[in-house]
Amino acid sequence: MAILKGSITDDKIYSKYLDEEIDLLIYLPSKFTPLVKYPILVAQDGRDYFQLGKLAKTADRLMEEDQMQSCIIIGVNHKGIEDRKAKYDPAGEKHENYIRFMAFELTAYLNEKFNTLQLGAGMGLIGDSLGGYVAFKLSLLYPNTFGKVILQSPYVPDSLIETVEAIEQIQTLTIYHSIGDEEDQFTNPEGITRDFLTPNRTIKNLLNNLALDYEYAEFQGNHLWVNWQKDLVPALMFLYNNH
Image (cartoon, rainbow, N blue to C red; front, side, top):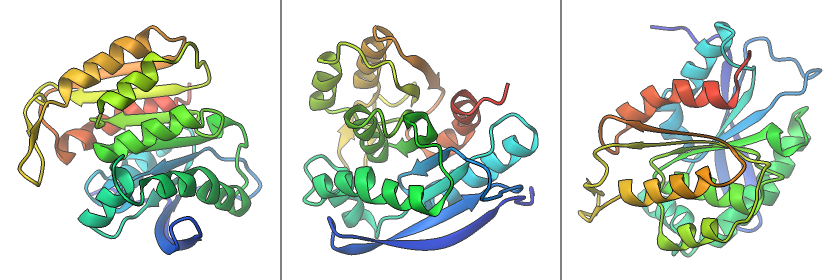
């Protein structure tokens, strides 16, 4: 089993928008020094990305192999299924305040805490499913803040398709976007079966028409962490290529 070369610590941030404390996981690369400016990648479903997706371990290995730029990774944790739905779902009662927390409070905190690259390309987002929707929405609303984004099997409602259709140009974004070829039949924990694949292909066609640094991939399989975990290697290498 690979030994982590970097370090992972716990942190907290109080959000005035949400009126609650948010737990964070912070990964620092092995040769971290406050003298160097680092890009930051912020993960929705932080604990899941670190534990199930092995995000920090995967990035750690790619950095050690010099296949990826050194970067700081922040995992933003939720408080369980109901809290996740309230924050990530576009109809959730905490959703708009969560978007504000991410765009204003968290970015200000990270820019103050670390020696960051202040341009949009310095702050990236990653998310899966509903977390992918949040990451995508934030990058479209604030492309000068979040210039890089990894979308793994994102939830794509009609409203998101309409937003992308209305965009004439958005050259500042770098997007890696993946979806499983069996996700036309995904049954969520509430027992509702949805077609994730078709709307994701629609988004792909729309994004291909924009002047973006954009990579789209369809992996074999369904809406599962085992697939997102494998997909992290090409995703991270696309966003943070060291060559």
